[in-house]
Length: 497
Image 1: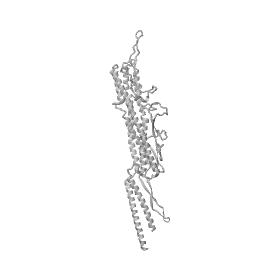
Image 2: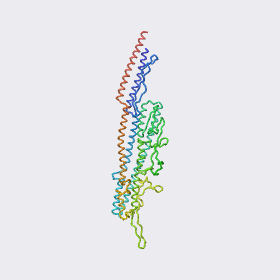
Image 3: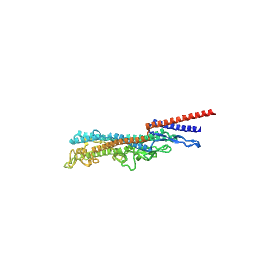
Image 4: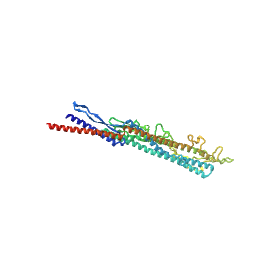
């Protein structure tokens, strides 16, 4: 009788183990499409067999093992971070490109061409008031074009600043969610497959914004580092990052009034900007600290748009101030009377610092026509020798196709220099677009590899479920048979007593 009861106990324990295995399999099927979920496998453990000691053997359900592979996860996070960087670059460079028109139909290119046409017409009739007024009008259009370009780039800067703050906030929020999950895990939910799925789904979202390294701890929680260096989450403790806009003082700024740059700070206030190398945040930092200052300036550089505006204004002013509005009048035979030649006045003005020096990083934004100039003050006479009545208009028209280095900027005409700026933006956008396509493919490959290793295959789970169902049914049949044998034995014993 004891042998029958022992067999019944073993069969019952096995039945419970198979039932647990079917629950795990059914959970896999139900969560096959759940973000962050990895296939779970029920393990079995053999019970000790020692009849003399009352241990009847059998099998029981062991730990549920996740198929998740940390190397596969890290590969996905890395590619997701690089894709996030490429996507952000495409978005921001697209906005930046709208401020540059190389077709010549609008913007700085058109304004320069119209200005050159106006001075050419003035050169044909140097005393014509209408031609002179047209020069002033077109100069105003040039100033307006530079102002408009600078304002457009400033708007991109403001948008970038907003996106930077939002991205930092999103990073902190996702890490806060992970902190909550860690607290739950440390509180006893370590083997909750659903909670684990939430953790890894959140980590994948986080990797879009910054490059992360996450390691699972012995207690089941995860530690998260930013670019493998700055801590974001250690156990149940979160370390928030922040963004601030500042004028760096080391080294000493070349342009103290230049636009500020962004710094990403750790929770302790340390500057970790240089560790932000990828993800959406990395792309925004690069745009804010490298690309935009290349046009609008910073503490260390004037910016190409400001440099172009200042050199164009200074060149035009220099040519006009070298000319004469009227010739000198010699004194009479007795040495009486006479007057010196009336020289030209500057056409353009731009902003200055408090000490009167040019504000080099605000030239494009502040460029304007000299408010005190009148058409009659445009100097047309090149004093020579020999004197040329329309020499100044001709010199100004020559800026369109300069013949000397003094009339060029970085070895190019002003129109070519502007076109080169625009081309650089277009090239950067094309490279970012190509990189985005590559990163999308790389991420898909990493995700497919992870799916092969840890994803749920409905076909495989169906076969596993059938296998355990049949084992469960067979074990149930054994229990039924043992139950019948037990009943028959009791009846026999009862009949013979």
